[in-house]
Image 1: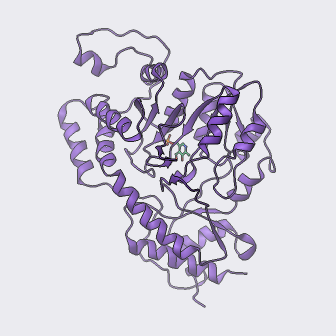
Image 2: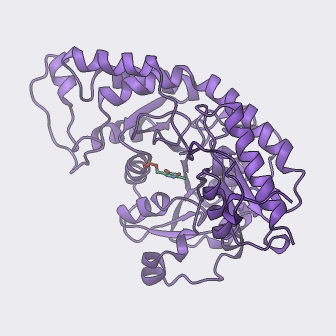
Image 3: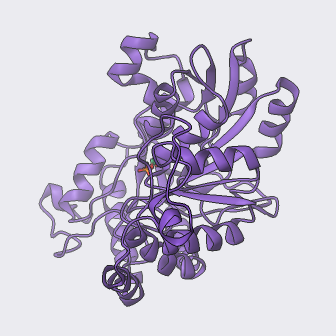
Length: 396
Ligand SMILES: Cc1ncc(COP(=O)(O)O)c(C=O)c1O
């Protein structure tokens, strides 16, 4: 049997392959250089152009650019009036930014367990967590596959709740023919390095709500009624402060990168789809692995390709498996450690192991494969060879 590198075999690769490498091409470089030379590098015309292209792409009435998805979730919650004494239901299988943003506005995050097969929040679990204090639901479209939005919106309607989506992974994803970003009451997207488009750091809020869009625009920059570009480009000299706002604006340098990336999003997704098919074909032959279930009637955003180890069929645990891949010169990632088991959440909300069995089950088993349009087919084949050799060697 072929020995993995960790057991003394030759590593599959001599050049390291890292998780989530961004694809930056000449268009992004030209766009950024143009802004740098223009004399206007902070929030201005490029940010406005990105907002316009973004709302046309997702099909929302408004898009407001911010400096991260975290900022976008925070201002959306504040704009929706969520604050002290309120509860917001979300998933424990997410990046901590989702539930942190609830805490930032003074409200309490309440977790609802996931469906093990899709790793998205389970609508039945949401229903069981609703109290008289519940004000909003924050679904997270894990890996880019939309949550069961019909059920979630139905629960929201019946209980008079707001739905603010964490769409960090889901740019380009669709649910029953509608783009994520045009489904819930507001959605926050991320342009962080590993996302479907990147501006290094950055984000966008989409909404059809006139009042929220106006508030978010003001709140993203100190609560001022006019930003510097507005004052420079119009006859208005003064601004008023109508809210003690935040410093969440996007710069035109980021927006220039975002415009170049957004114009290539569909081709990025096509490449991601091709690599997802290569991984799926190879990994479904291995009984020691389980792949996430894909639901019908949706277009997966393909932000991450996640495998789940069937630990009962392996002699290594997940962390050892990650070490084995690293020895092959391949660095995967883990999404996520269940949020409720982090110290802050245990100490402040009393969460403990056993509270969310499905999230905890997958949290011990998931591994995220290297996956980005920057990869070549040979890179993907290397990952497949490495995973196959490790799984076969440590098979029970
Ligand atoms: C599910 C999820 N939500 C929110 C975020 C936060 O995004 P940002 O870094 O743009 O604030 C991330 C980023 O990794 C994420 O994966």
